[in-house]
Amino acid sequence: MLAARYLTGCCLDKVANDAAKAELMRMSVAGELQQITGQIEVDKVEAASNSMFVAGWRPYIGWVCGTGLAYQFLFRPLAQMVVDIAGWHAALQALDLGTLMTLLTGMLGMAAARTVDKINGVGNGH
Image 1 (tube, rainbow, N blue to C red):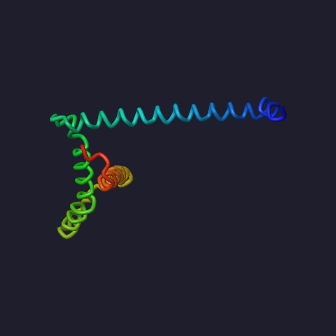
Image 2 (image 1 turned 90 degrees about the horizontal axis):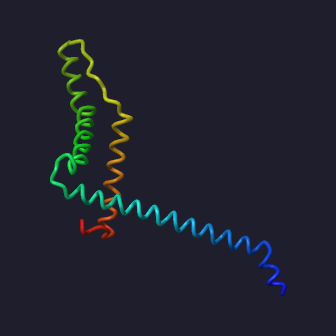
Image 3 (image 1 turned 90 degrees about the vertical axis):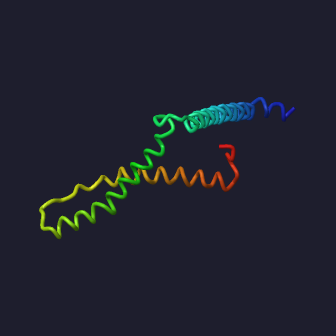
């Protein structure tokens, strides 16, 4: 009798609240999982495409980033040295390293995540 009164009071509300929270959490996780699965399917289709404008954008970003880094840290200092030795009055423009490094760290992070996946045997069918 005491247990019935206890359950019909504040605890019943807590049980219902906890159940509602669990349901919302399940729906949220299911929605996020569905979005991730959808993005994986889009990535598969893009990777399988022979079109340079569909499958080539990721390598293009890599080449742009690599070219920017080569300019900033190799070509520009060497060319500036040649300009200075020759006595010309010119300053080669520096790149915005904040943007370049954001791109680079994002790409390296994705590559590291993929490497971990390969080590763990995830997605070997791709």
